[in-house]
Image (tube, rainbow, N blue to C red; front, side, top):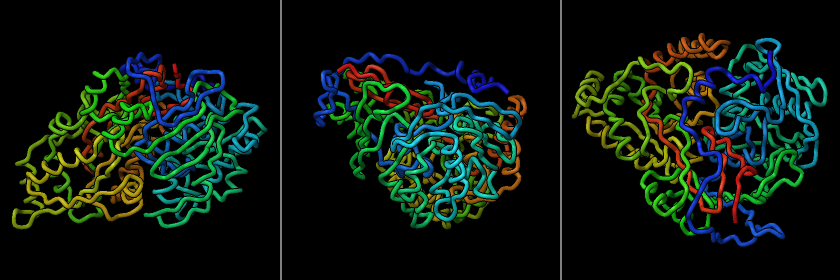
Length: 558
């Protein structure tokens, strides 16, 4: 097999050619200069303030990327940690990172040639033994550590832990060569390694600070000492401090093996409210923020701030937990689907350019099927289906509707408004809604770690361009989020993820998307356009459709 630099999949090239250009180069801004309240942060002898303050919508759930599954955690992790594989700037395509190349001698074996002269933040060496330590560590997780609310990505991508996993072994052939073997083919393995969850961390620090000593329960896990205050990677920034609910501070890594840029300090300031983030930018107390509220776009543009759109490589959905009363009935799920007017939702509360979703992946991904079963908006049909399921005006269906508050996600910029819109649509067909809200981290723990939830708002920004990263992640095995057991669907997804050619994958995943929409575990709603906004002094920002944005690439003018 060819090395990494030649391993870009034909389908990924097709995707890259088809998307709108992402603003990766110079951003021309005309807004007022930053007057952030940090003071300091300037390089001696330079008039450029080297502190970059980003308005985050929430705290990282963990500082250990092995236990990360959400965008705010990934945003912080990507500054401190690196994996074997990264992405081509501005795309979802895999690219060399800590592995400068790789070969695949057979369907289940991957030989990685590693960068030399790389050290972790604690001064210890990055090498093949460190690579194997990290892979073996995650595969050995048990108990709370192996729960869906903790090591989510290993469990989903590797299909379990220990003997149940598709991971077989890792061998340190030399200081600079590691061989990873899988038990079965997995076409998406290389692009999956670009996830922060597969970052290579310092074995010495993991052991010293008890990284695997997590506590609590699956519904309410407690992070280890390492995961709270000692993250140690190879990335361009090092951990400095965290004040939960306030900010996370990182400092430039003076011994970074790659290029260091203008930014010498990063502050992720937690501002949960979208309006407050806009006001902070306007006041000059932050340099930029993500997930601009649709209602704020025009005002920011008129004020001269730069707006940078990511291509919407995502999906927003209404999930349905079939373990909840009533939701295991397909007629009920179909009724909910036909009660929803996606176009009205998009027009009223989602950003301009958002398109309705017909299935659980965007059109750019292999296997998207234009002919999937469609549940058109039809409130009368929804009422009839509810009646057939035994629910009438005298005996209405009552469902818990879970949604997060004080958070914005690329696929869900304004969950409170989305909930209100959908609530009115569902109530219009006679469904009684019991709203339940949680802060973001608790919300994820509830949906992924427990069974006490009903219909719920969630979504996904693709981590890499592979269908398994969408439908395989959602529906590849039984989970607490969806609450169903469908061996036929699980088997179809297991077989599809091992197919080698684009033609085989295209046909298999097209069939799987139809299978999913017939089964209807939830309602795919939309593909929202995520937007970032920046102050004038930010002249270049490395926007990425999969949010692989590392701040040593940020350029500052003052």
